[in-house]
Image 1 (cartoon, one colour):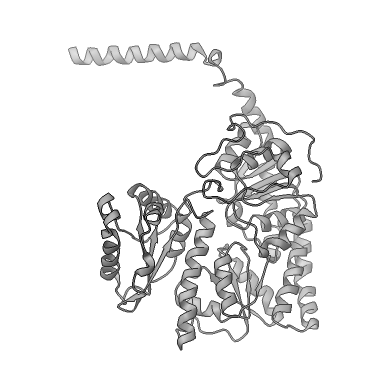
Image 2 (cartoon, helix red, strand yellow):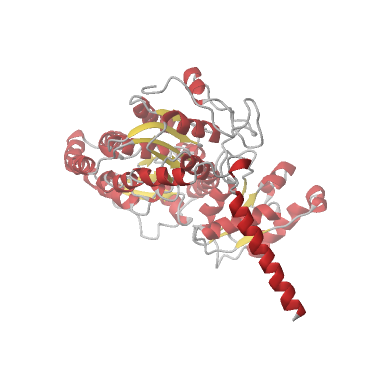
Length: 491
């Protein structure tokens, strides 16, 4: 580890060493974890602390045309998931099959689900109905695999996405996308299937794996064109028929490397996969080489494409530099790609934590980052991420809500990964200069944080700092209000 301090400061308020709770990670000081090479166990009660993972699969289904979604779980869970989904822009009704202890243990719940999909299966409205078991039905063993494969020509897709068995919401996307791709693959093997809405491409296509900024597929398509290739659908897809087009590709680009179940489906269909993505100068050059090799593109064509595509990326990186030390945390699956782009933009990135697992398709990015002194933590816990902030004292912390909160307590500027970073374009020349303005502006807020910390110094930290004059003023105001109410009653 380059530049790591010799000592690690404790995190105020952190649980005691060895204390674990549901969905909590191992409480290991960051320095010790780095030196020992220890990794976080992947047991059900030792997972990253992210949102309910079912949100990921729910969002995939709600973004697909002609697709209905049905949830089966505790009412509070269903309420929270639907609220969050609509908060993020969903405009679909979410079906819900309620249950109680009696229907759960007698098997009546499965009968209710069976009845619900039959009532919902209207081929004029839907291509597929997705039924998702949350924690309680999954733990009780409600057998969605016994549902019919189709009803009235509408496909029935049943999945289990419990919080105690699914690491992150990104991996829940993988579960649903793989289940649908499996069904589509078997349908394609049996005979002709629907063509894509826009027709078949006249060139070999590259299927893009992972949710991306809307402009990213367009930018990637422009980079593929000089190679004689085209960008295919992005998986998860926008509708069922695009699954067939995704399978009918020359190669799969595992932009987000955590879709391991989906990649197994592509492997079963005889399709190759390439990891990493066209981020920055070096990342784009390596990715073009890998895609071209997988599609047997002649070497002169490859070199001509690189000579055309790489100089604008270099120019964009040189004109938009990032100045400062950064630590970053997230659970989307794209954290390593963003870190690569920041490093090539000049940032001093010390730590990248991701709640997602390490996979073969993330190895190239991990190797590249670690060779430049960046510590990459897969299956990162809140405790490890918080310790990294204390350890490295960055100029900017990028991460999730708890990380942003802790950084602000330490007077360190911070921004949210999901709300800000993951919505920016990342690929090619369009992505090369996209981060600098946002990140430099956030780093330059340091003086404001110092001023606020000075102003609020000591507030709420001890009983003697409770400002008795404020308490007395509030007591007088309450007394005046009570006197007024009494006067109004008498009057």
